[in-house]
Image (cartoon, rainbow, N blue to C red; front, side):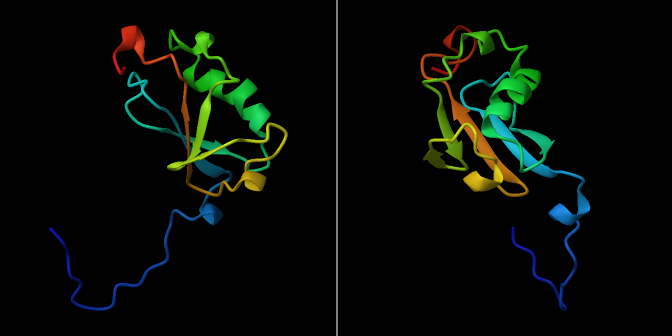
Length: 118
């Protein structure tokens, strides 16, 4: 059901990057529904992709039984719905990520606990 304003509805958004100490990055691991939704992570956009993979993803997803089985050379990466190949030494900003961007990754051959998403 849509809503119609009866007068001008102009306001300053309170979820812009200026209101946060770090940019928010939404990170989702496709087909791993033990995590109900992408995680919202405050990160500097100067973080390298390598640092994200080596230092940040293990703290977010390391408890999952399949995390240690990930073959990082076969991971498929998505910026929102668009597949891309990250430059591991490049920063998030250099690779097109901004405040509230979505990063998704898919791990071929790993389809959730006991193949629950395959």
